[in-house]
Structures are given as structure tokens and as C-alpha cells.
Image 1 (cartoon, helix red, strand yellow):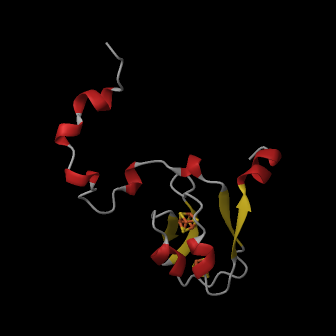
Image 2 (tube, rainbow, N blue to C red):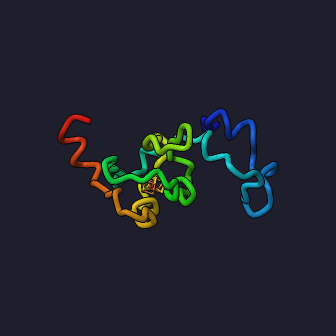
Length: 106
Ligand code: SF4
Ligand code: SF4
């Protein structure tokens, strides 16, 4: 017998939605996908205007906000897609290779 992960034993393909669709929105907060990231967003807070455009566009809800102000990134959910950097009006987000943080011991 093949040892299968517990989740597979509980939910076989027979109970999956047709087409493997995800029927509920906003569920990415339950999954930590930051380890997939090759590029990490880094913000220059001196230039940030707290317009929250990055928050609006992030597909993974990986932007942290408090009291109407941008507070940083939830890196455990950020896949490093770079959309926030592309959409940021003052261009204060840059995408930095993860390898450079590993060398710093971050
Ligand atoms: S889009 Fe840019 S300026 Fe606006 S809140 Fe995000 S980081 Fe700050
Ligand atoms: S890089 Fe992509 S996933 Fe990460 S915070 Fe920016 S928009 Fe969100």
C-alpha cells in the first residue's frame, strides 16, 4: 500500500469540484506560498505615498495595511510576482533577488 499524505486520504479526487476550480474567493491567506518567491519586493518608505494601489493589485493579499497606511509585505504569502512594483505610482517598490538576502543571512 502507498503511504499518502493525510489530506489526500481525507479528500480524494472524487470530492474535488469539477475542473479543480477553487469555489471560494480570498482563501490565499490560508496558504503560505512565499517559499516559491525568486524576487522579493522592497519598498523605499521615504517615497511611499500610502496610496494603497499595491494593496489593490496584489493577487495574494500580501500587503500589510494599518489605519489606512501601507506597512509592508506579508512575505510568507508573497510569490514575488512584481505586480505591486509595476503598479506603484511613485515606483518606490523594487524587486530584489532572494539570493541577495540569503547571502546577508536574512
Ligand atoms: S503603491 Fe507604492 S506608493 Fe502606493 S502604498 Fe504601495 S508602496 Fe506606497
Ligand atoms: S510581489 Fe506580487 S505577491 Fe508579492 S506583494 Fe507584490 S503583488 Fe503581492
